[in-house]
Amino acid sequence: SKGIYDILIAEVPMTSEYLETVLFTTPIYLDRQVLVQRKDLTTGKGKIKSQLELAGDTIWTVANSPIAQRIKNLSSEIGDTIYVIGDSVYSAEQLFIMTAIGEIKQSVMNEAVAKALLPDYPSADINTNISFTQFQPWILSRENASLCDSLNMWIENYKLTHQYSKLLKRYGK
Image 1 (cartoon, rainbow, N blue to C red):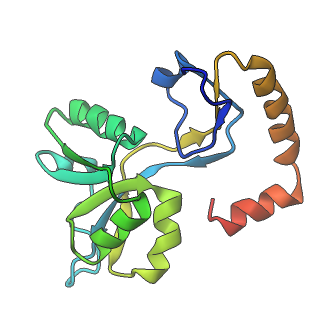
Image 2: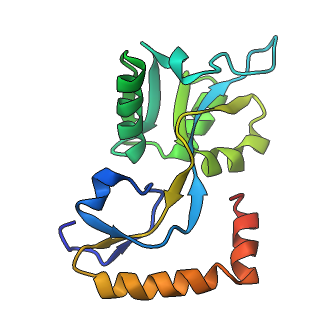
Image 3: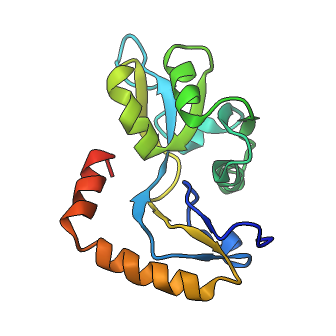
């Protein structure tokens, strides 16, 4: 938004709050946010089955992540506080591992990240969705409309190729 960078490629969902300050490309893929928790030893499932059960509870996420805003909105929707610990040291992958081994109670991250790690950590449960499916675009400064148009043409053409399908399959999208 300050014009320092031309493009940002990251897991940032396309939301109305960002539309006021940046440009979005055509979405690259779809993703959503999920709760990561440990499976109960008796049932083999996570204890929290619904977003409503997070009322008054605490979750961890990467500091300054768009996920924190989603949790804030969810708190308003359910009419109770969900406490967010924004960790500035650990990545989403590390928070997943910390949750899976019981160092922290639960975390929220993009489903694609969680699915990629799940085979190595079968004690984790990622079956509780925190958000609806969200578009995942690239982000550009508002001053780069022509670059955004060019990228959109390239993205739309690339999405028709076998290579795009191969990338989606490889990274679990």
